[in-house]
Image 1: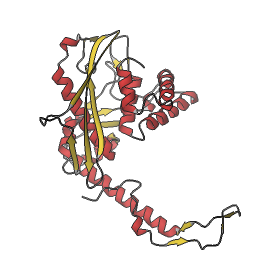
Image 2 (image 1 turned 90 degrees about the vertical axis):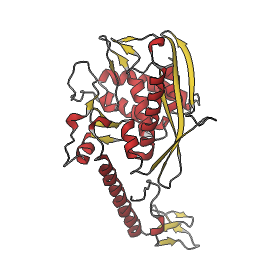
Image 3 (image 1 turned 60 degrees about the vertical axis):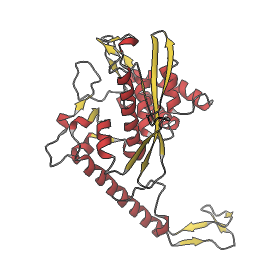
Length: 321
């Protein structure tokens, strides 16, 4: 496999033609005198950029080649983007050289932490699971998986919240572990994939997007949705929301998407739920609602009341939105 590189991992050794300014002063672009500084040959810099672009393209092709051998049941479609399932992460971790390790207790079992709370909806609990993922010979990255007893996929029946006694604890744990695996994949920089990427990976095979489950955002609606018409004001709010999600999550696009999904989630009159995986999915009215939530969250973030997206999710799960 081609060795992985990050955007900051440019082939510095290839940049040989570095010209150090003499001890005399040099002039900046405005003609002012400045202190001696290092100046880089432009041609050498362009060569490094070309090499970086080549390596990133090879990495993309390698990723799509690996994805080629997954099946449609391992993916879900959210609008124009696709999201991997835990089963696909398990299938891809060896060819992608992903080493995944769980934090374990003294008996060697995965160390799940459990929190409980009460609110107007009644009692609830959540499991958290921490571990590390290492890509190739890079440094390990801390990753967390989380799932609460109010996860919409198994905590509701007929649009109504199930009693806590009817929510299976083992299912919540399994979803927590699955969430951890997906975050491992995203933490390695593989998180944002589109339907076009998946179609390209499966080109020439008997697999197709038609067999991939589409997450419906509207009960009984079409899987393919038209982009909502929005005003310039809503566009500005989308930009603010996107920047805030990335800032709170230190640039982690996977966590930014997860946080956006939770902040945009609401229940319709018919009992169905809707959420946005991308700010571009927010309608005029939805953007206004999420904008107010994100503005309040950013105030807490800047005041040091929450440290990151994980803390924000914990705060929201307790009903303190």
